Length: 252
Ligand SMILES: Nc1ncnc2c1ncn2[C@@H]1O[C@H](COP(=O)(O)OP(=O)(O)O)[C@@H](O)[C@H]1O
Ligand SMILES: [Mg+2]
Image (cartoon, rainbow, N blue to C red):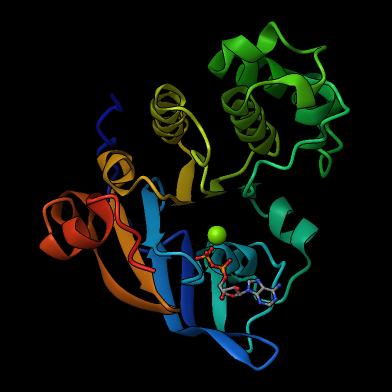
């Protein structure tokens, strides 16, 4: 099973803060006055049914979708409206939905793509060693084409690739989607490991009960509105969470 969350200190200032976000796709409003915070050193989980606006929240943080109003602050600085590469350079890493590897490229080439914003080649080589230390199975697969790996192995590559950018926070959109139960446990364990190494994690996860085992805090999004949030340990026993997310039913 997954390991318990680290006892991260409660920070005075959050690493990430979304404030009063309203988002539209054409005429359709997806977020309604959405605000949330991610404490430095924490794992924060965003729960919610299909089409509630979870992926769009990730895209806003990464600058891939622009909100009509509201602000995103990272490490105390406004990043709203910045181009994605600038946001990445400030320390935001991403493990996108469905992993999005370069299937024709080797594992090694995929990992180095994660350092594309960096010019310090010596440090990049050191980071490759460090990341392979965290994911020893990938060390045996460096020359293999990424597209030939299993789903779980591809997820490891996506996480390792994100770490190659030396992020202080990683955003993960449904990291266990489509994986076998064994790999779901492994991937969540790796997320807890990455977090213990000092990386803050903001993740969307369908496996609510497992996610709440490794998370410090969670938010529940329902059709674009945060309807509930609290410490993961409290939410695990909250009947509203149990009924909507822990019974295997999608609350849409
Ligand atoms: N590029 C897009 N253009 C128009 N509508 C979109 C686009 N992306 C997502 N949507 C819609 O916005 C809503 C929220 O989507 P999304 O953020 O992907 O939700 P979730 O990740 O919670 O399933 C859904 O109704 C979806 O159909
Ligand atoms: Mg989604």
